[in-house]
Image 1 (cartoon, one colour):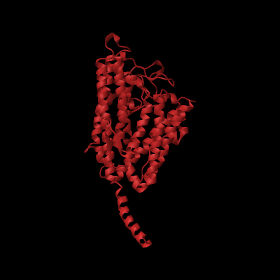
Image 2 (cartoon, helix red, strand yellow; image 1 turned 60 degrees about the horizontal axis):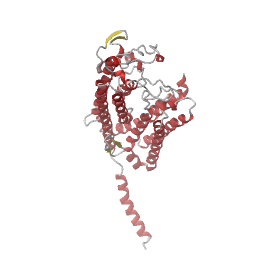
Image 3 (tube, one colour; image 1 turned 45 degrees about the vertical axis):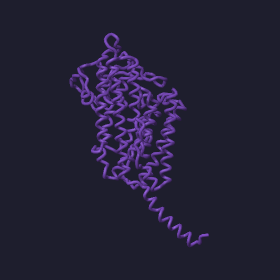
Image 4 (cartoon, rainbow, N blue to C red; image 1 turned 120 degrees about the vertical axis):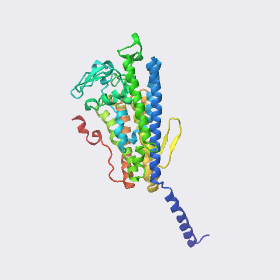
Length: 425
């Protein structure tokens, strides 16, 4: 039997061995930041690869239009959204991403700028004189008092002339949602089942063409897709070894960790919980959904949430199934406060479960725009489950900011959460 003196000595020796070992579990902050940049590069790289698959499907649709070709292009668009939505967590903490993001993912849009719309859509408004411009139908038009030659629809026309024309944010001429509209057309079902129902003959040749200007519609679709490719190619390069986005956070631990947590908190709170979810529920507006033409909003919300989790855990599963993984914020937090890390991981899981319920319900036939209908208690419960989870996880992100000694971080807000009365003013 050991004496008390021997036990005390053994305890001291064990403590001496354990303390350095625990300290070693904390990763280098530079390694955490480098892994974050690696995940960003992989996520945008996957977005680029998926967009190239979409580009090929679009080219086939335009060259040899058919119902099957249109469906293939739609399927490719849906697949392209999976990696891209996981990239949105890189927006708010990285100015280079936030300044660029509107080119590829701006919404909502006044789709009458691009192509024909239903009579119920209306026409030009005081807020937007170009709301029903219909570039597809008009090879020349006036914009802001200037005559524009759009005989040839090119990426430059879309990007330099039409995107946010007249300074109106709703004039979205480029990116995923312009392409989405050209593939699905308007969703005229309101809160009823069904998404956009554009006929494949909108791309047909000769006398089979419906709604006119099928050749120009195809030109617009290809120009928008080509522009998306070039934009994603540029952003992927920004996260490469010598890229500006990576360099901006490399060698500056405060900047790097702040970018990670700002992106997580702002996407969770103001953007997703507020502008993308709570606002639509308050307004009961089926147009207040992120992928409104395709009824794919359940997936957009789910993969946004997954992107936040990816950054915290330091893991990303690529579209080919390979894993990008390394030192993480979770490791860093756990080394300082294991209970706080456990709380964060638990809240992320709760949020993903709530977003998963929305996704499962939509895939079973209860679409997101149906969930937004006034008086639909089941829909409201599903959406608010996601909203509440996102808000709750943001509170723990705020605690992590404090625990890591980072000052001056402010998350994006939303009137729908912070000042609900202003929504109806």
